[in-house]
Image (cartoon, rainbow, N blue to C red; front, top):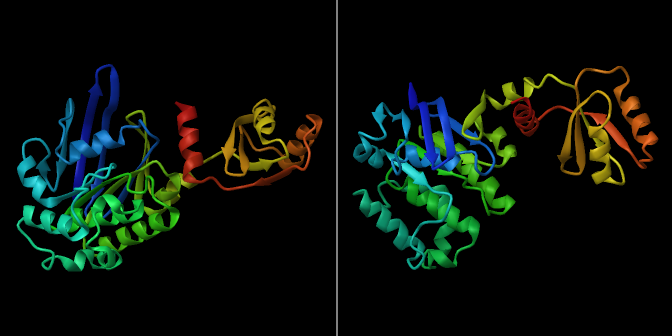
Amino acid sequence: MQAIEVQQITKSYGDLKALDELTFSVASGELFGLIGPDGAGKTSLLRILATLIVPDKGSARIQQHDVVGDYKYLRNILGYMPGRFSLYQDLSIEENLAFFASVFGTSIADNYHLIQDIYVQLEPFRKRRAGALSGGMKQKLALCCALIHKPEVLLLDEPGTGVDPVSRKEFWDMLKRLKEWGITILVSTPNMDEAELCDRVGLLHKGKLLALDTPANIRNSYDKPLYEVRSQDMYRLIGDLRQMPGAYSCYAFGEYAHLTLLHPIDGAEITILQYLESRQHRDMEVRATRAGVEDCFIASTLDQ
């Protein structure tokens, strides 16, 4: 059964088309990642699914209910966590949580099992005002408030933005545990490494899906030779590699440059080293590597 169905959704803001006939679905109980850079259309889609804005064209259904016609019903079964912290800054942790529970006619005690793993980390600070919390603590509180009414579908808009790496990892560990309660989770993120933590992902760029599959299948679809390269002068290295005969693309990737070749070359590592030596590079390192989701995303944008 599909928990979320999006059919040819289009949304524009003046001349800017944020979503362009977007179509995909999310299965019940799935942790689905919508991966893309800023401006890809992620927030617009989540706001449509959260019944906050209306699409220009197309339709979306959650648990078989239309997001426009059945918005009152859906707001009772959805949990939505926007990208920007939107809880009451002057209320304490426990006051925010109690307020959101009362809005949905429930109590903290009724659904404490859903938030227990998260709330135990917040409880020592339960009297602290939300505005005085760290970024990671704010995200945990926002997730608790989105869960307190036991939603069937959870929509999370870039929950890791502005959060330290440890808190990000803890947050994703929490999402995996929530899956065990049968909650369908749609999470958007610009962080390509978070794609690996999802059951399936959609790679979104300029309002269109470039790929839709499991992270493993997306990685395995990369069909060109890929090498990681570095030298003393990385800026010049990337420029030179882009000019190398047989090169398809080259871009910075952490402490390396990722070089993709148009076709396999016998002894490619030696060929690359010899080319760089002819350009007076020093202390070079070249080795074959496997593509990640980010490499596949970049390649998809180049192929368009």
